[in-house]
Image (cartoon, rainbow, N blue to C red; front, side):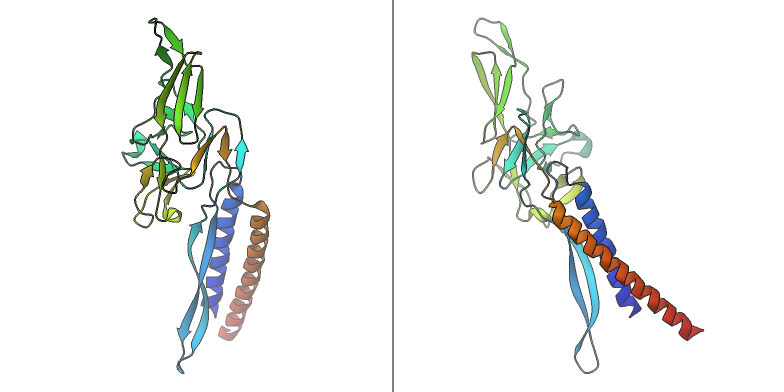
Length: 257
């Protein structure tokens, strides 16, 4: 009996930890909530019937549903509508690409299109995207970058004054057989695993891939009302199981004494 109570206590503790993490990241761009899953445990008795022995916790499973968009008006704030993830790379983490739904982009001093942790966004050829700060005019003069736009298909267009427009690169989208099995690397960045399958990288708006929306960021898919209600239930279950464990312990001590 005591082992069953301990199992229930551990399950409640894990659920509280998962829910607390969801709530604390409710305002994080591109965050995907996790959900605790349980499986019943049974043991066979001498007469062949199954005896319930409680439940065991399984690894939390991320829910990759679409988050609500937050309009920012920033030309380098880009949200993904539908399936797919941005492809990024950081030399400090090795050659393997990483994947994220966070499209809060910026330019460094060399024109590299980078994430908030200085990883480069990659184009459909797997190359880092570099935005030139100037272009050569027909008369040989120099025109400075005046505007950047991101089209729904991921085409990044740079304007250099009123006369020069350059198609710089196309953002890549990565899709997976099971996106929920990606490995979390922190800061809403993920890497591929055997369970997720290799990334299928291609253009937006093709083969089931989503599209890009410029001037917006995707918020988390956390529903605060649902998470708070679930947290209250988990805490009540934890408190009830703790009292059962305390009562069981006192009963055992009385028998020993």
